[in-house]
Each structure stands twice: as structure tokens, then as C-alpha cells.
Image 1 (tube, protein in one colour):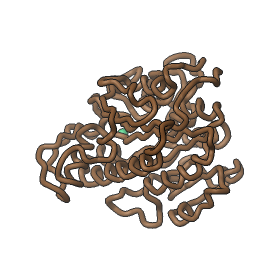
Image 2: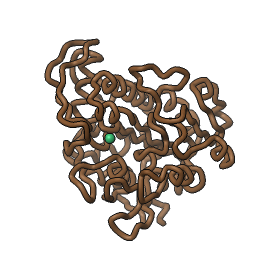
Image 3: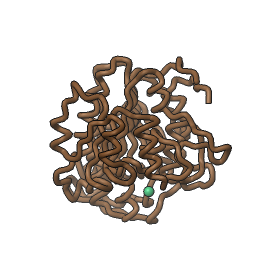
Length: 341
Ligand SMILES: [Zn+2]
């Protein structure tokens, strides 16, 4: 493997699962009564992204995240493994950065072995191989930061045995000794985190997870790669639930602001904000003003083929084009120098 590839020092790759253009619009209308007000909508480079998988026009999160993480199209349900093909492991952005001596992290509001983070930190023929995905995290790719919902293939005992400091609630996250801890597994609850709309109880917000993660990752002066997923935008889309959809999208926007506030004085950091696919076929019909949910329609309880948005800031962000494919992110991040496969 060529480990001399060039890339920004730090990359913060933010994925709103299921976050199509209309999701962004609905959240902005609710928050401010007008469009264009979410944190990432102020980023200087914007475009849209095609999302089909190797075997279907409508992608799932596994194939879409694999395309973003590796630059290769795979079949729906596949986690960074060459299928169709000989099934070899596809080299991911997280692994590229790790092999350059950088720190790495995965953060999601879903349980952490869910498809989107898995495509960056694991290799499995099936997204449902949750125990194997957990093992890939702990023993193969070993991200410094693993923060998200717990259970589903991750256990406290196994994470501790693999050298991770385990935390299980918001207090544990906020009191973490980030100066002295270099490997943390946040296992918050035993499934997806609750929806923002319903309140998180003693579990942390996505924005809080990211603030803590940056304190740990930024200690490595060689740099870092961090994938952040607003994972439950998709779930609210599947259930055609505009209230929860808007609240999840607004927390995702707040999270991107935390990342931007960390990066804004720097010239060596790339922030990408995008989605993996659109969910629900959402259409905003009417703006009802600030603090009132817009009137909307939905066309499906599943994913759609609609192109999804991309917003970029910082190093390499100028390479974002008006219309790009989800496989283009790999070379965009790696500065057009592909590693050997
Ligand atoms: Zn979905």
C-alpha cells in the first residue's frame, strides 16, 4: 500500500443519513423562517451527488457509505468489500489516514456498528454482521474514537479488553480526561440514541460527542480523520415524521458548527457535509414561519434516487463539482492520488 499519498492534514466527513435537499430546507424554515440558514449552507463550495449502488438505482446506506469511504461501487448491503468482485477488502479513507500515522474516529447517533460508520471502519460482505463489524473496529482498524449507540456487536468487556476506555453516558463523556486518553469507546444505551425531539435523558447530543472527539483527535499533530453521522435523519424519513426529521437535522447542523468552529482558523483541514441518499421523497409545500413545522408531503417510506447535497469548506473543498458521484469523494479527499489497492 502506498502510504505517501497526499491529503489534507485533517478531514471531518459529516454524513446526514437520508438528508436530501428538502430535509435541509424544512429544518431551515423551522429554525429561522427562511431557507439557507443551516451552518453548512454557508460553506463556499456546494453541489449535488449521484448515489446509485452497483446493483440498484436506489442505494442503501452500506453501499453509499462504501462508495464514499473507498471510491468503489458495491452492492446494497455490502460493507467495504469488493462485491461484485472477488470479495477483497476495499481500503477506506479511515485506513488511509491511519496508515499515515493520523488519529481516526467514528461517531454516530445510530448504534455504532450500523452501516454508515461500518463502511469506514470495517469490512464485511453483509451489513447485518454486527458482531464481526464490532470486532473489525476493536481489533483491525482500531479508531481512537468510537462514539455512538451501544450494543449490537459491541460490548464494554470486549472494548476494554482491546484497550479502550469505555463510557456509557453523557456525564462520562463530558468528564472524560481527553488529555490523557487516546482510545475511547462511548457505548450510549443499547441501540440507537433517542431522537432529539424526544429528549436524550442521560445520553449525549451528537454535537457534544464531536466536541469531545476533537479534543482527543487534535492532540495528534500529524492529523486525523473523523467521520460523523447524523444517523437518525434517515429513520425519521422512513417514518415520514417531519418533527423528528427537523430536530435531527438541526442537531446535525449544530454539530457541523462545532467542527467548523474548531477548524475555522486553519488552512490544513477539509470539512465535507453530505448525505448517503434521500429518504422519504420529502417535498416542502409551504413555509409556516419560524418555530412552526412547514407543510410537507412524502412519497415513500423508503429511500429514493434523488441526488443529495454536498457542502465543502477548507483544503481540497474547491474540488467539489456541481454534480459529482459518491465515488468521487475518495479522490477528492486524497488529492487525486489513489493508493494501490
Ligand atoms: Zn434508510
